[in-house]
Amino acid sequence: MDTPRHHQPSHPLLQVAAVLFGGFLGSGLRFLGTKILAPRTYDYTSWFAQIPWSLVIINFVGVLVASMVLLRILESHNPDGFARLVVITGFLGGFTSYSGLIVYLDKIWEVSVLGAFVTGFGAFASGMMAFLFALWWSKRT
Image (tube, rainbow, N blue to C red; front, side):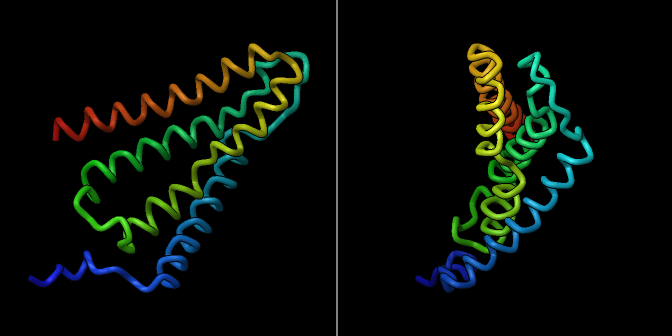
């Protein structure tokens, strides 16, 4: 039995190129988004003022879109397929940045250890809420 064309493995260099291309676009959009949504001002008197709200919003949107795409559009596609590599692994992987959030948690930690834990948990919870919303949405449509 022949495997459908979209399930055949691609050349590894093309897969890497697909992820790099998507990642370049996604991280570029994240950079612009963080500059447009909330330019950083530093207020070291309050941990709440240290929260990178633009990055929290970007991560929420990225998780929401990735979850919706994976649960509905790319659900039955090959994990190594170009669409999945470019859109999910590359673009949305570059667009979201939980590692960037960790850098800000270090700055929040300097002001308030509790504030760093609250911010970290809040970021995790918002990602879970985005996924759960996408799951609910995928079951309704």
